[in-house]
Image 1 (cartoon, rainbow, N blue to C red):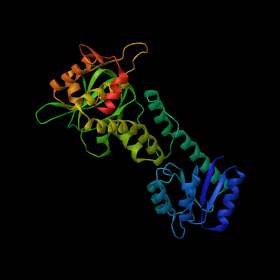
Image 2: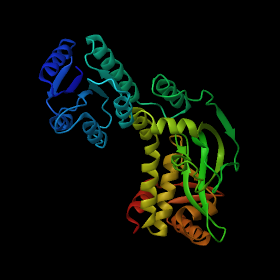
Image 3: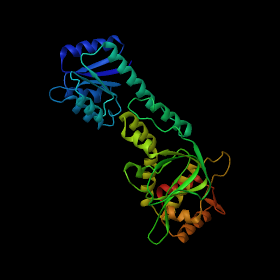
Image 4: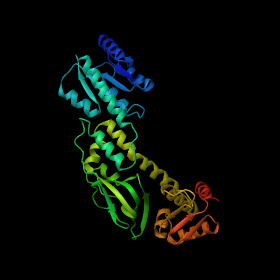
Length: 357
C-alpha cells in the first residue's frame, strides 16, 4: 500500500481529500500546517506528498525547500495544492522542484491521476539501470517520457577508440560526457616540468569527463588516453545539463549513476595520499586487478607501464621499479614485460591496508 502525506490547513479540504485517498487504497497521514508536515515526512516516509501552498507557520514553498535539502526526503514526489491560478505561483513551485500542481477546487480523478502518474515515474527512476550502453539508453528513453524534460539526443552509438588515442586533453573546453562500454582509459595531469601525474584509471561502466560540464565554459583539468582499445559512448553537454538541472527526481537518479565513480575516486586518492610507496604500489595493483575481468583458475595479472605506475603512486620511476622488485623478491608478484602477475593477492591486500608488512 502506497503512503501519502497530505499537508493542508483547511480542515474540510484535508478531511475530504484524506477520505478520497483512503478509498483509493492509499495509507494516509495528514498535517494541519507545514511544520507538522515536515516532521511527519521524516518519520512517516511517504511515497508522495500533497501539500497546500498558503498555510500559517510554514507555507508549502518552505516545506518543499526543507525537504529537498534532506537526503531522506529529497526523492519524494511533491504535488502542490493552491486556491490560486496565478502563473507566478506555478513557476515558483516548479523552480523549487515540485513535480506537479493542482488548483483548488480539483476533481477527484485529477488528484488520483496526478498521484498515480508521479508514483509510476518515481518508481521508474528508482530502478537499477545496468552500467552499460543498454542501461544508459534505457535511462534516456525512460526520462524522455517526462513532460518537463526537453527532448534528449537520440544518437548514442558506441565509437571505437584505439590504443594510445586521445579522448580529451587538459585545457580544452569540455563539450561532452564519456561512458566506457569496454576497454581501459587513464587520465593524467602534466606537471610544470613536463612529467605526467596519473589521476585515474577507468574501465567498463565508468563515466569520465563530467566535472567540467557543471560550469558554462569550463575546461578539462586532465588528459584522457586510451590504454586498451575501447568502445565509448559520448553524451552531449546539453543532455548532461538537462539531466542534472531538470526534474529533481531525474537529477537524483542521474547523479547516483555518476556518484559511484566520484566516491571510488575520492576513496582511492585519499588512501593513496598518506601511504608508503610500498603500500601505494600494492594498493594500485589490487585496484587494477579489481577493475580487470580476470578468469577464474588463472593467475590474476595487470598490465601497466612503469611510467604509468610511477605517475599513479606519485613516485619517481626508479622508486616505482624498486618497489616492484621488492614485491617480486617477496614472491608476491612475477614480472613478465609490462604484465605483472599477482601471485598472492591476499597478502597484497594486507600490505595495501597496513603499509608495514
